[in-house]
Amino acid sequence: MKYLKLYFELSKVRITFAVTLTTLVGYLLKSGQFDSTLWTTVGGLFLLACGSAALNQYQEYETDAKMERTKNRPIPSGKISPTHALIYALSMIFVGSVILFYFSGFLALQLGILTLIWYNAVYTPLKKKTAFAVVPGSIIGALPPMVGYAAAGGSIGDPAIIAFAFFMFMWQIPHFWLIIIRHGSDYNQGGFPSITEIYSDSQIKGITLVWVSATAVASIFMILMGVFSALILKVLLIMIVLALIYAFSRLFLKKEEGIKVFKYFMGINVYLLVILILIVVGVFI
Image (cartoon, rainbow, N blue to C red; front, side, top):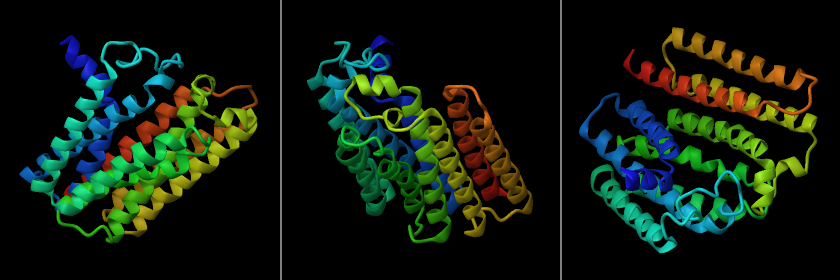
């Protein structure tokens, strides 16, 4: 059990589970059924994502050791050696890739590998160079739904999956942004540039509201592209979008110093979960 927990930490299971969930929704958006290919796709992508997360920890274990938030991760804490972590990461990537290739198709595999490359070879090194790495890095969130959609036999040029992927891209930016705001000083200690060094408190609030508003627009875009067909779901989505904008507008209007980031971070995560549920419900209505 102790070692299982370590591997879960190395794989960032909470994050990889969320990634896998968007893959599942992407698959259902096209197929509308829980079949065997869905589960093999979800399983293959999950293993690939776990391997990618473990590889990321291998890449960053020296900087992780400098930050309070990450110093107790498996590698910097000495619970798992870097070599052991690398072998585990490559093994998971290999097995996940084989499953995607044989059960989900070559296009699904290509998209899965592209996600890994973007995360480990583009976003990870870019974080050390610019505080705005979150913007190109958010492409990572747009690709897993496409893996599911492609595995179900869909074209990644279909308006519905483009709209869903675009929403995931936009949502990822304020999600990452809030993480960096919350742990800005820790990021600086690890040698990562942070927006907290560039902008004032009020500027950060304003920019956060802009990104959240853009996410709201991307949500409405899904209605226009046919992701939602039932009138009741369209109405519910619009109501949820308005609630999101209202909540973050209050953040902008408040006069006190500092930002209660965790509350808003949880809010943006709950918003995503509700959107995913609405998409799945819409598939079966």
